[in-house]
Length: 188
Image (cartoon, rainbow, N blue to C red; front, side, top):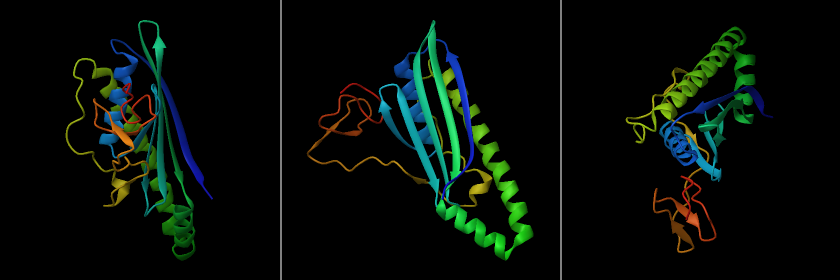
């Protein structure tokens, strides 16, 4: 059983940036926030992170397309509880009824506040990227609801093998038949 907590969508036109730059900024930003990131096409990115103790999975989907003089960027952010989180929630509900109710409500609000913060940081970073095309600096701040746990990245880079080729731009390991890097979108 998977319970969707929320899905948020936002679209912005970003001036002074190319689709390639928008995708590079997207990849760098979400990786810096501990999301496993994969390119689903040259101008589309999917990222996920999973907090195993909570059963919380957060996902982002970002698309870029030419729009007037700039680039239109779509961002979709969702959070859901997986079976692990649902089982833990039911056990807590049975054992500690009042605490579980209050804890669940506070957690939901904290998850949503964290999503809003991440989205605002993303838009700020993408808007400033043409002037400073650098990866975000410093470690990603952990949200208060994470309670000392580190997220597990759902999508990880494969280990290099002789059947893989390396991207000249980001050093990502790709299948030999890949035409675009699945990590940064660069043409191979």
